[in-house]
Length: 139
Image (tube, helix red, strand yellow):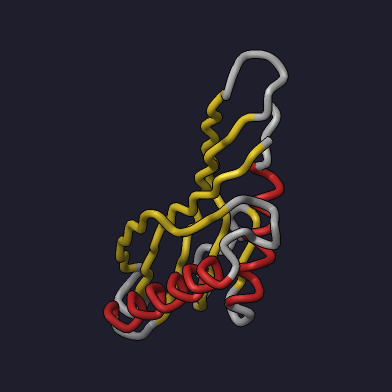
């Protein structure tokens, strides 16, 4: 399938790394399960293409990329969750500042967020936010 999804994902990685230089932002799971700190990774992608007509016509596509934000610390569950929302907010603001991701897409933005808290022992709290980033491209 011809798609701009890898290019959009690469542009998101660069943008999110610039937005949060103190967090570990990776393409795919960072492979760290028990470390304290702030992490984010680009995960699943979904592509839907709208055909203008049959044949070799250009077509529009909507790309959804899940970005998983994780914070882990011995702080309180509330503090860890707030840090996760703050990190997600940095990513959202980066997309507002440059919705075309440097002309990689027509527009992009965060369209959904799902948040969950976990406890990994008596003094280890984890907050996870899954952001759905949607981008529109023309191929």
